[in-house]
Image (cartoon, rainbow over all chains, first blue to last red; front, side, top):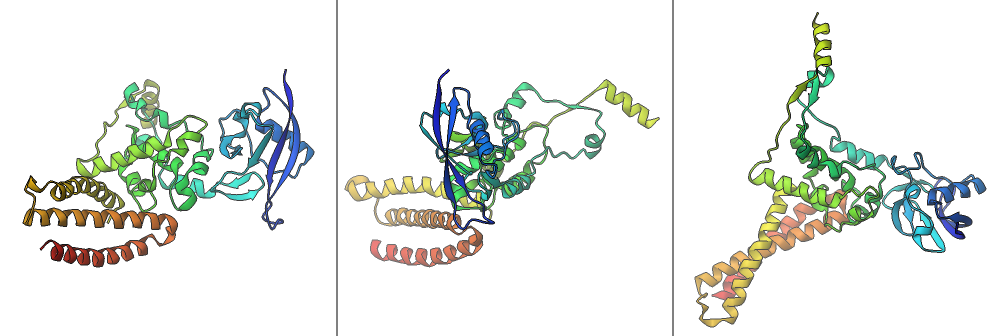
Length: 264
Length: 98
C-alpha cells in the first residue's frame, strides 16, 4: 500500500493566551485510507494541546467541519491523498468565532437555525402530544423536500457563503435551506410563521446565488437551490397566495387501542 | 415595507428598464418609428423612475450587507436621497425633452 509523508500546516490560536494566530507544521505518514481527521488525531498524540472537534468519524454528526486546503470540508470524509498535495493546510471554518485552534463557536449558527422554527408545526396539539396515528405522506410529497433534508449542520455552507462573510446577521444557507425543507413538508402548518422570518432584511433576499454553499456541502444538499425556491414561495405567497396540500391522519390500531384504554 | 415587496419591485423595475430602455434607444436611433412628443416624454419618465428605484435599492442592498446593524437607518437615508435625486432628475428630463 502506498505510504507517503505529508506536511500538515495546522492553524493554532488560543484567544485566551495568544495575541495572534500562528501555524504549526507536522509531518504525518499517511496511506490511501488515512483521512485528515486520522492525521489530526495522530498529531494530537504528538501535541495534546491541539483542539479538534469530532465525534462519529463517518460524516454523519457534522462535528469535524474545517477549512482543508482553503475549502470547507469534513475532516473525517476527506482522504489526505485525494487532495493531491504534499502539504495540507488545516484551519478553522471561516465566518465562525474561533474558540481554540480548529474548534469554532456554533452558537450563532444554531441561534439562526432556531429562529426559523426547525420542526413540524401543527395546530392539532392534542394529536401531537397523544398520537393516535401517523400523518400520511405520499412519495411525491416526500420528494418535494427530501433532497434538502440531508443537512448534518456541519457549517461548511456557512463558512463558504460570501454573504455571511460580509453580513454576520444574514440567516445563512443552512437555516434558509432548513426553512424551505419544513415549508415544503405537507405535515407542517407553520409556513406563514417561517416566511415572516426569512422575508427580512437579513433573510433569503440577501443571497446572491454564488452557490458556494452547494459547492462545498459534503452531503450533496443544494442550499442555494433551496434559497431560490424560497424566494419563489414568497413571490407566490404575494401574488397568488401560497397553498400546499395538507395531510391526513392514518389511525393506527395500536394507538386507537391505547386511546380506548385511556378513555376507559 | 417588507423586504419581499421591495425585491418584487426591484425585479419588476428591471423588466421595465429593458422595455423602456429599448424604446428609448429605438426612438433616438430610428427617426421614423414615431416615438416623439408626449410619448417620448412618458417613456423617459417611466424609464427614469424605474432606473432610480432599481439603482437606489441596489445601493441599499449593498450597504445593508456592509453595515448590517444599521439596515433601517440605511433604508431611510437611501429613501430621502432617492426622492430628492428623483425629483431633480424628473425636472431635468422634462426641461430637456421640452
